[in-house]
Image (cartoon, rainbow over all chains, first blue to last red; front, side, top):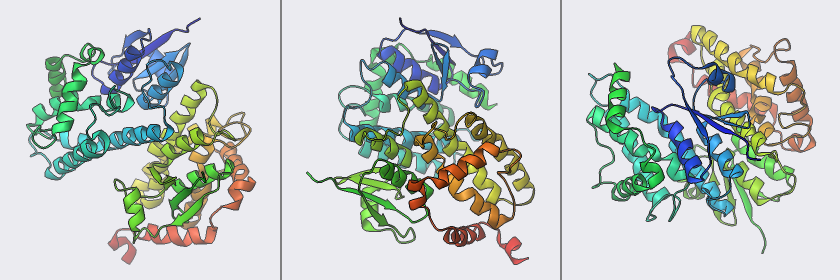
Length: 217
Length: 225
């Protein structure tokens, strides 16, 4: 008998969406619980006492935290519609690129969450563009998706390049992902957003932008 | 076809040790290629152009970087002596703690040893806040992975390897008997394992190396006092 799956998430979190996309792509039924991060539920504190953060996946009553750990668990537990390559070397490369992106998250926070009056940090912008260039050249190359002809965990892990990066660019008046300098990555964003599961599971852009702006004040 | 496995490493890198230990536990023959990080070889730069760091595993000419990624690859490629738990939930738990170790515990412990004064006091509080989880995880177990050494023990190998070195250099105790009886027992059990013991770096060399490293972190005014 299938054990119940619950996801504690938040509509404002890109990490939350990674898990939603993986579950939906594999056709896994789950109950979604929206958390108010300013007023965390007892359930969240009980299921993720170490970090007290979302997303948390709960399968048959057993909780798992950290979106990337959750993604690997989902892949192992529901092997249909595989999101990682079969070949172990290719899998290792996929994991390398996923980690590469997550490590860079901090640089992005520096650039985009500076005080509004401050001029955008030129060095941070350079670093972000450099990062995107490596991604385009080494991780994506001439493929349609990071995962090849179909999306995989790497695409899911970089989903934030869509909505989330665009909102940060709009907010700061800084453009880092330009079609002229990063044509293949730009095309990837368009292709990724057109996938039905992704398209149907994105936060409303206007709402999201307003939320980001209010968070910085 | 003959298998060719090379590990680009330094004699002391705790991340490289994870890879070397994993290969040794599985009895996979490999070649050590020692790098001088102040003068990186063109081969290393070719195999790890993104980060230019060790360790790098090269298997039949194909390079991989990032120690935890390499451990997963080693597990999938050489199935003898499994290092990861079989159950997916336990695997997820192990991965969670390994990330916690690298993202939180390691920087906080390192912070204790390179900071000074009030900043060090705060770093100590943070480090204890993280280390207490390790102590809890060992409850009822000899190793983090259970009865035998596994992935999570290798991931935490730096605790056994380096903390006492830092403690000796700075003359302070972080992992004490009162708060961390299980962690101290784990450190001893880990170090006593024949495979781990065989490739353990010389302690006096570690002390010299980290003394020099710590010296480079002290601000000039303090060093000149």
